[in-house]
Amino acid sequence: MTEYLRILSRGESLSADQAADAMHLIMQGKADPVQISGLLMGLRARGETLEELIALARVMRTYFVPVSCKDPDAIDVCGTGGDGTGTFNISTAAALVCAGAGVTVAKHGNRSVSSKSGSADVLEALGVNVDLGAEGVAECLEEVGIGFIFARHYHPAMRHVMPVRTALGARTVFNILGPLCNPAGVKRQVIGAFNLETAKVIANIMHGLGAEHVIALHSEDGLDEASIAAPTTVIDYQASDEAPNVFRIKPETYSLEQADLSSLIGGDAKQNASILRSVLDGQTGPCRDVVVLNSALGLLVSGRYESMDDCISASMTSIDSGAAYARLQMLCEVSNKL
Image (cartoon, rainbow, N blue to C red; front, side, top):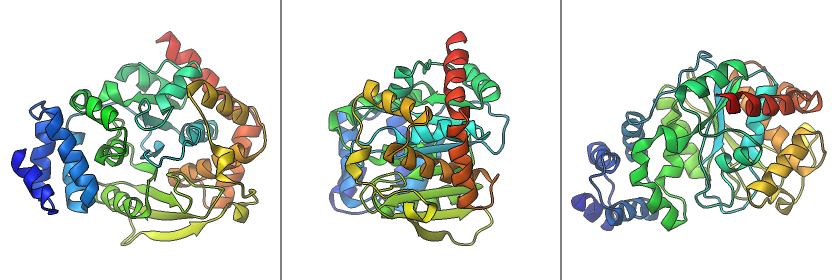
């Protein structure tokens, strides 16, 4: 590991083999916290290369506990985190709306690292049992159409990293790697990134790792979500594409009102749970609109809908019919019985 730190200190990149070996050392507990911290911040300071990220992701995927998912078209909707904006849990709400629209969602997430409330925190506050093993999550996926994969239970080797991430309190390469390593093996994902360059890299990595359809995105206001406060750049990459389709979306294109970013700011898990409940209960306003926009992208990658307009409509129907809220209630009920 010392040699790899020297390379990074010179502003140079690691080769694929070097990056892979560094990840093996971390996952096997053979690197001490100071070395891990140095590696993470060295990569961040210089900017992770595509070659490094592919190698790191491939190694990390060999260490997770797999979750069985019978639906080959299951999706995940998540962000890398680390955008520093403090919004409520938009991706988690979008996952529930997608499930309400009939799409299987293997929601992969964790507790908060650099924000006040991670997906595990808010789901727990909503009454979901977030501590299920692989069989329990598989049962939720089959019975409810949505299951929560609590990252810390499925990436046991990450115990060597989490104290360092928590102490750093800032985004690291693991904010990128986490969404790339869903234990359910989903091949359809929406991944928000903390900057546009990272979104482009994520799309290319996922395509290279065999994704059927990936949408990576970043909003001009800094969100790692599709925003209603500013245009969002979308990198849409399907398995059959030779190159990604890059385009910008605006809320007004889909009859959603533009709003100030401050209207999307959340708080702790309890406060964010209240926001999610109000959205799923049909309350109108900026929080609903941003959830609808992100849900629509999730439905788009599912392959069930032809256009964004159709996906927007289906997202609204999922909320207004009570289907999304019903999925949350079912998830609470089923997860707490297992």
